[in-house]
Length: 404
Image 1 (cartoon, helix red, strand yellow):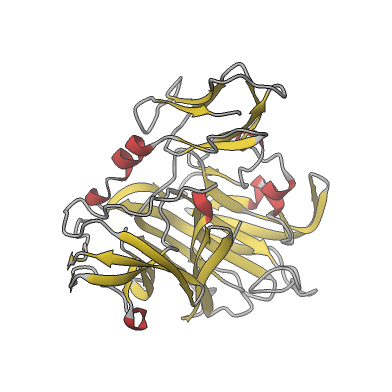
Image 2: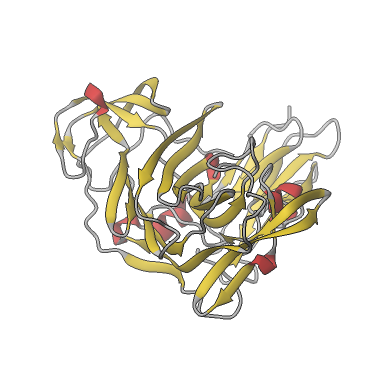
């Protein structure tokens, strides 16, 4: 599934152990859909995370309705993170409208149900409805093991997916599938690098995923991403590779000083968790076409549980709290998007007298000059922790702006 952007500086220190030092950025290189950069290593041991996975988030779906402290059932791209946009419940050119009532909890299973019915949303009309779940703030994660035990539907016309998405157009597809091929699923990485969209997808054959439940998992460490089905690794992508044949640098490997390749597709920021059952449209959706006329409804993507684990060395919550800030242009000429780049439960925005907030998103605002001529000394401020149980200590982050 695919839908702005933090970029790290051209040099950075990669691990707390100090076994590898500063990288010097050299030249970009794109191969096989993956953007590589040449970097210079001083040599050392590639970090190899060893800490045990610890459960940090889970939903076993044992209730009678969706836990709205963890999930929403739409894409939160409307004002203030609402569903008030056509894309929020249609996801563009797909064949469905996502409805809250199509997420059905029963007997410890969350079923995302696709139904044949005419539905309208924000002047958009579709011939099908379906269900999805999307984590809500503060449930974003950087690094970890993400797993869901699912059973997929079968037959032409359906596109189930389990994926992570967030800042910088980072996206990891744990799996997505066209259900006319019940034994085939795909994994993928997406990211916008500069002004270009890059991706690295791969097909994987397995058992009939519609006949029983299977555990789909992703292990995302700073240096490597692994995809697994029922505990068996089916794919991995490493952050760093050798120049020759782009052979991966394996965790724990001792490497000499020299030139290597960094894969710039690797995500850097916290990502939301999304599970959805899209309906295909012939000629518009990948993986599948429109459902057949004699298809039997409802079609169900059944989810037994969703769990997230992290290692102690990830330090996810502490690091993210320390790194929170405001992302946006420092020079303001017109309406511009500003985002808060950290965990939060409640977020408030303030602006100086020369600015006005036009509208809010789930984690940001669009602000603009109030008048044609704006005096110097303008600013925008993000404030967390007022009236909420926050994942981080309350903070105020201010970005000073130039307007001339």
